[in-house]
Length: 360
Ligand SMILES: [Mn+2]
Image (cartoon, rainbow, N blue to C red; front, side, top):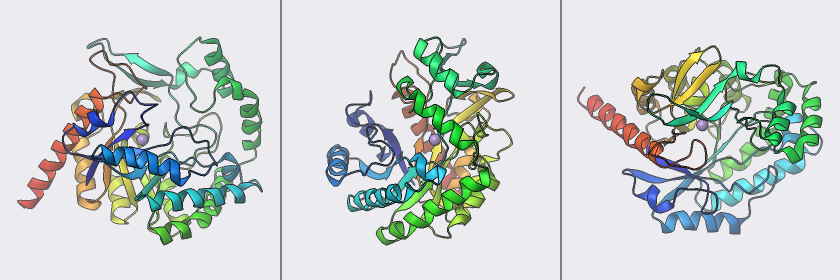
């Protein structure tokens, strides 16, 4: 297992590579070029600069996240072939610089959704990301973006800033005719276009599940439970067609058994990497992101780590979102302190599981 940490780059992250390097047991980063739009080719120069910076700080960069899939691919538009070609070019460029796993998602229109980015915990004053479907009321995404424009609440739809409102309206309309089955067929077309390239250059594609783990705003979604993930790995039968199992995203739906899901795909050799964090359920479709420690939330982190140790021991793990603690400010979910605590805790669980199992 390699413990890693998400890093957005020197210009977009409040955390420095040096700080990351000082966290015990940190082997590298899960990187991202967050200024690249979906569909754009990530050039060799850009990748070399980013990876070189990490390596100069003593950190590997074997996992890259958020190589976003262009909406035309998800919608199956004729222009998709051009974007698939671009995606293959990015895959080749990343492989040339030592990248082994690419995390992406196939969620229509939106990435993740929360209704509060800094929900304060009365008992200790920390804050974390929070979701309550009831807070959305009858509001659809258009209204939420409009509300964001008016600054009237904390909703955030990443990638859909108010200036893109007209585009969002058009995209939402187009999805009205797309069923989950059709979305899955478009997904198959995408995978058939990129997996041969991945196999040739030794890249594993790791699909991140939908977050929260159920369909939102009437959009088709296909990656939020065991059954859906099973269909994805079967779309193209290749070890390069794998998953990034995110315990917090899948865990937002209490009917998902996270250790069982990890075991299933770990045994199949289809886990590219893991995002580990904890969730506290507060009611129907209502949760907040808890500290990593099992007892602070509702997920059994010991069983999750044990499942990973037993079925995909060579995987990459990163502590996913943390709370904001010790007066830290930064990108919601991506401060230093709580994620560093999370990494230390996950490393401790790993060591315990490893030593217990060698004594059997
Ligand atoms: Mn995640």
